[in-house]
Length: 346
Image (cartoon, rainbow, N blue to C red):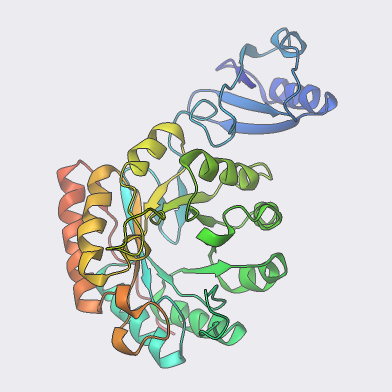
């Protein structure tokens, strides 16, 4: 349920409500808006008497949340969630672009692509160092060596780092190096990992599972938010259908649907959703037109030599053109793309 405080409620009155929530075996999640504070009282599904809270000082009203996901819903928080990432705001009217190689392959490769995407207008650098691959014989990533290359790239370009976490025990190492943890499609319902990512309080990009519904994606995000980690981005990356002409089927519908159901920022991954660089720009443009808050795009200076997903990676010049197109579409729908990240000299 939501306990909606009066606009003039004092901090003492808010604290008193939180204490009452916790005394009844519920979790209290406080959301402070521009006009008033909302306290989410989250339990295990058993009914809770609203009268326990309605008569407390400072309480305006108590409203049940009808959806199975609570903290992620617009019922709990009507306005968009916005949080900073290296000088830009994720969510709201601005659009962010994350770009880089599928896998960190070498120091020279990641530095080359980092400089290229920054010059083109990217706001963050993606790069995998622990790779979940279908075949155990495929390239599995460079691990900590790759993290050190990414850290050097951040030092030289000013781009924050996004990389995938696969296991709970990797979180301390990754949070030491990277700015955003990515939970990949295959781990969207790895609930132990979701709990651990939530406990880390680290900014998180959560990708939709291969066959997951929108509600299942939001329930996965609920695991992370339930630990007080509110800096979460959702990512549509294509779903598995009967169609074989592309790697996955891009669910453009999911973008406006998610925007209507949740306050969390929603990004689109046009690389994985198509699996073919020829279609990446078109689907990226469509995602922005549909309301996405950003894109995450695979870029490689030499995709024909890539150790993973070269066929869906844009060359830097094609990525630069996509950024220009994204700026034009954003303007057409009353939004804007943030300027490129500032250059930080080593």
